[in-house]
Length: 150
Image (cartoon, rainbow, N blue to C red; front, top):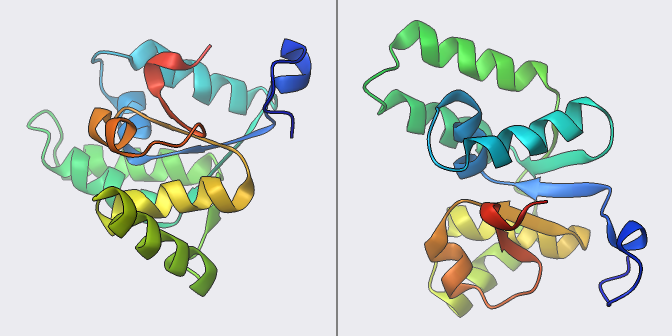
């Protein structure tokens, strides 16, 4: 995968890691909703693959559960819609767990957040997150804020 300064077409990645902070924006009209929808639409169009740890389902459901505009049925419907998209998900295997724990300690972030970072590292692709703290703490070129998505 070309991470240099080459041709833009050659640099475009075919798979991206996304975290729950991005997916939640698919269901909420909030800042950067348009960027999150652009990622989802590119996936639906087959232009990219979206990958995440299976943790994403729990985190999205939990975030929506605490949104006062969502009741039981709305959260269930959102989780079903997410499941219907058939993202490529990865279990918390020993490789991912080991890397996630290392990253969590190295950058002072939660193991939950580090799971997404470690998956991006292991898959040699980019993680997009709307979590400014993760972007600020993780000094890795493959961790980008959602606002950077084009």
